[in-house]
Image (cartoon, rainbow, N blue to C red; front, side, top):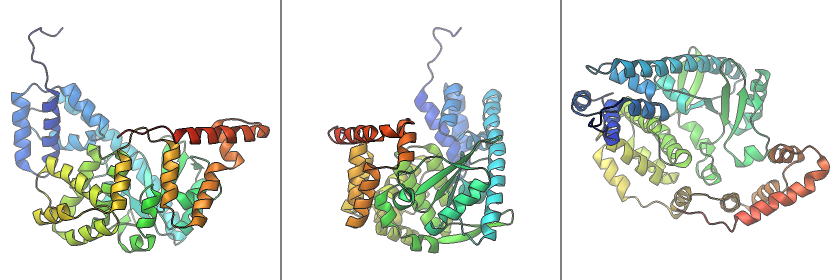
Length: 393
């Protein structure tokens, strides 16, 4: 039983302590400050661990706090558990990735590794520090069907049924395949960087493939994005898919900046951010990086970035990300407006309004084909009524 007069742990101090631990990855004084805060404050160690696990940074923190004097042994053991779980999980995933790369290499299919697989193998000190839940690869659109067949031959199954044949390749940026195994495996095949029709047309695939560098993983050949595009991709991913929140993704940005150090072409980064309408994503996420890790970004670059006025298209898209309860009908209209010509608009609209029978059966869970017209009407009713529901900022 706790004493009635025991000091109440300050959760804000716990967050400050985590930030100092992350910063100590490169800055020795931060380790001393973390040790001092640990000695002089009433840290809530359960809250510390819960935050680390929730934010997927427990494996990173394990390697950093183990060298802090007098760090609580029980908490260190808990972090150690997540570190070795990450090590085992990632070893299995990388073995699967290497096997896939070898097959694709033999068939002359180029692969760009994205997110966790690229970062864990090339940027972090070891693969255990960067936890992964799936494998993300990017291939050229015309090679997607070939990669799907390779994965299906390895026992993978498509995660979802597409609305009409070819719909996913035309209007999405990825397709997932899943295999139930000793450790369930999910591989997502990408052909563009973001799940946004606006950005699928804004970032030319031809330019993307010119902005890569060769890497080798256990003799298997692959590609990864060049440093500047790697930063832009992760800033966009953090903003578009995680609402700008997530310590793991923010730490990824710091790892990239510190790994490449003076080899980053900041002028090119700025130029590409303007060209691809990623100014706001870059600005907001680099601001967070500085808040945690200090001035690790050139000041003249930040001053120039702050002077840039983002395009109206980027502002509109970024504003839509902040809407809560955004309806399916509104999303449909927004996507429709981003398509470049009427032919694509008509095809996109038709595929959404009249999905295939197989899609409808899975989506609405019915077996009798005669019920299809009624479920079409139900689908249209939901879509139309959602247009009149307001999303809030």
